[in-house]
Image (tube, rainbow, N blue to C red; front, side):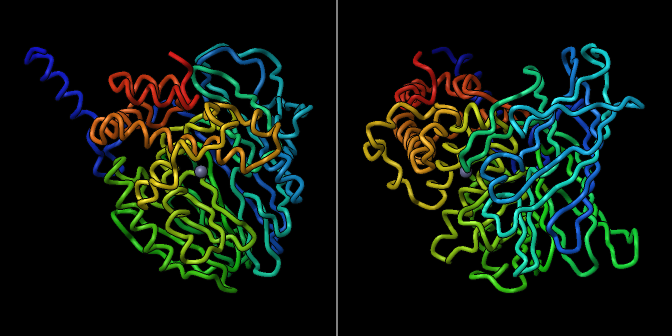
Length: 454
Ligand SMILES: [Zn+2]
């Protein structure tokens, strides 16, 4: 190759360098949706009412609005959770929600179609019911006086370049939500004395009525949100330029807030060196007494009340989702491997668990099925098959690809994928584009069924 080509390649490598701070990531789209959500929680934390205003400018004609009420998905509904839109309007026009057959899918027909590029403002009210002692993302625990609720308001189902996303809410514990980054303001009204932590940066409190406090948060660009309310002890510490807040039930937890922050600190360091700086100013984690695993939301995590030995892997995995799912979004129902395989891969590297993820340990019946959608995995009704087929096989394929390509070339391609797709919703084609000059990696991903055969 000539010197010119070499220089171009060196410059390309430089553009894929690691962002040192959150503000070094590409800026979010200026015309992203603006979403204002307010929750008013019942004193017993069994329910909440809410209001939501969504302003967005669709990039193609729309004749209806589509929102997803994810607390109605089978695994959450069985645990007693529910979300209902109680009123909807655009301007002075009242819209009638249509819900069928999928209870998570709410269609609001407009009185007339709206051309592409026209701003739409929708005002909703809603009622949220939290499942008692739920092991899901939405629930409350009377014994500990705590509540936690993620993806718990009507979620605008629009993705630029694609339109409405109507993936089925399958009967499997894993995520199926897809949404765009929005500028978010979030307010949560709770009883005086109850702690509130949430996605975003806390901007202050007001007292709307005696004994009630409204806690306000803002986030520049997030595709979803999670809130925790109740008898929590909140430990806050700044680590690696990030304000980390950990909410543990006041009734007690196996590990302390400081021990969780120590582990988050380590994972922030490892992931930051590999992927680039954690992309937000704040990070919140809630210890949920009735969960058995962990769940990711933008700027917020829910963790089981785990034993110390299990915390490093759990923290490294869920934190990695802040890059894979939160910063770079994906259709979690259609392409669940995009966030789960990369999060498991980053977890393995951060914790020295590479040997756990080997292609020769994947059961034969699951080989080549990394790229299957959630509907496929739900048909088997077996969450373990999903984890083995997508998380473990996907991570093993990425680790194998990294061995074949060399860590430097492979990691540079991963960083290019994050840079090119920050604040967007990516698909397998974007992964293939990022690895176009790393054929060893493309081959390994095709063999595992993550990418279509070339
Ligand atoms: Zn995950």
